[in-house]
Amino acid sequence: MKPKALSLLCIGCMTIGMASHATPIDPQATKETKALYANLEKIIHKGIMFGHQDDALYGVGWKYDWNRSDIKSVCGDYPAVFGWELGHLELGHAYSLDSVNFDTIRSRIREVYRRGAVNTISWHLNNPLGGTAWNAKTTTAVESILPGGAKNAMFNKWLTRLATFLLSLRDDHGKLIPVMFRPFHELTGGWFWWGAKQCTPKQYIELWRYTVHFLEEKGVHNLLYIYSPATVADEKSYFERYPGDKYVDILGVDIYQDKGENASERFIAETRHDLTFMAKTAKERHKIAVLSETGLYNVYMNDWWTNVLWKAIKNIPIAYVLVWRNACSGPPQYFAPYPGQESAKDFQLFKSNPKMIFENELPPMYR
Image 1 (cartoon, rainbow, N blue to C red):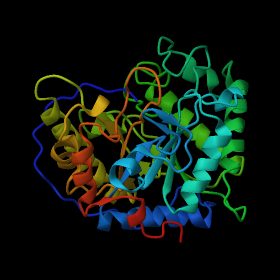
Image 2 (image 1 turned 90 degrees about the vertical axis):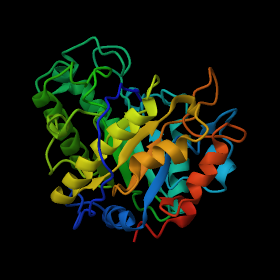
Image 3 (image 1 turned 30 degrees about the vertical axis):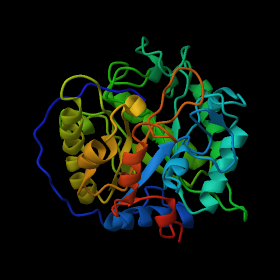
């Protein structure tokens, strides 16, 4: 997650037709993965799913309470989309970069699947040359893990660990659980080692394609791949590092509201700008568009949900919108309401919008 400055763009309200005939890029995708993709396409007819990062793991003032959720505590229902983080899995650690046990993440993913909701995974893997994913001082990290690079063997080991985890995501009958996978995100920014200032477009594209091929060769056929830059100036910038239609299932974008004068207006304009061309292009390319990450840090506006976020996504055919996590400890850091939080009542109004979809309103997503 990285909030980014937004530029004011005058974009009028616009409704675009939905994507059609979407099929996963993996010809060997499981039956359930194909069904999920088809139903993501269909859900756009009904509305927009709401998602929350780490919703089932922790929230403000709590952690690991089974079936607890800040979202459910506020509005009576779970999100339709649940986000998870796999950073540090590549290191062979038992706990993620957010200090969550990977066995717990696995069990929660299974529970979400049992209930019929949707899972999406991000992966803030460490810099192969040293440091965290946010060590953006290097300009040769991506080059080092590509074939012929000094760290390629290590990266292959990291990908093998990732594949092992993804292949362990199975339901009660042993079938693979479909997940939307969002690696190397916010690539148009400069805050990750895979960012625009840290590698060339060619290197990024090669990294993405290499990852897809590696996982498929390991037998991972339960993924839908999300390409998600940070907010961009135009469509050309969005697609500058695009790996190609054969390597991407879903078009996403990460946009956060910043602070300052007219911040809400800038956020609405920028979000509508990006989502409008994304939805149009998704239809043309037989893909699906989503707002893969968004939010307002500590949600300090009591009407942000209905007066800002809804205005930013209204009448644009995206499958879901996901807000970032509610930290359970340390300085206050949350992007969703919790009981007593100043935007909680407004979120209840947001939830009552017939175009917003939460878990109990989902149709069958895997058949």
